[in-house]
Image (cartoon, rainbow, N blue to C red; front, side):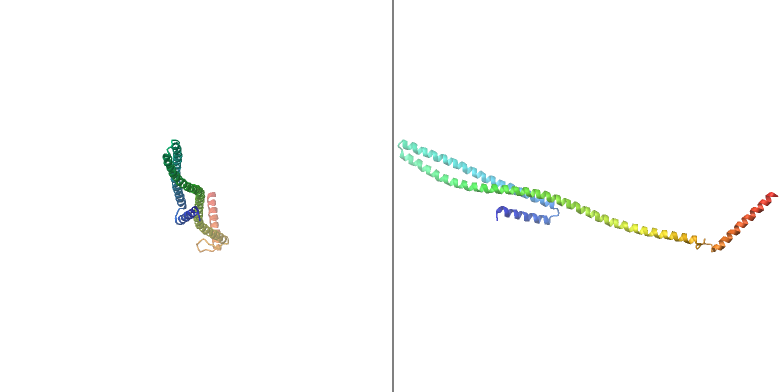
Length: 231
């Protein structure tokens, strides 16, 4: 398993733990994203250090190559002057620089391999962060939508409870209204049938006879007054 894959799995595991434990997934997602960005910055700093070391080695290699060439020229010039001793000394110095150059070149190649790996890792890390950023925004949007849906459902549930109480009130009012209407109709029926009295203890026949007597008395009084006026 590559280091990048292992690091990604560990990071994803931590993110999952954060998401399960946190009350607000949005904060956990943002925190994880910030940590990934911090990790990317650290990787870039390490890469910059290695590249700097590579550049220093390349400069040292260039210096060593220049010295090798200079010692070579010095040896030629000494031989032309019949100074074999100086030529030998110059070639000895050249050999030392050649050995140094070989060591520097090997170190430079090793550093170059590290730079290539770190550059590849940095690019993959950056791509993963970009993917995570996109996923983060999608998850935050989905979470926000879910929150809104939960609030709507809770509101609907509360409204249902309230409407349920209103429904009971309406049913009770309808029942009472129906009973009152039935009672009114029953009283009308009883009144039309003469079942109900006026509360004075008389029957219907007695009330009609009393009415007739009252009418006759009024008629007699009226006739009496008329006779008096004529006289």
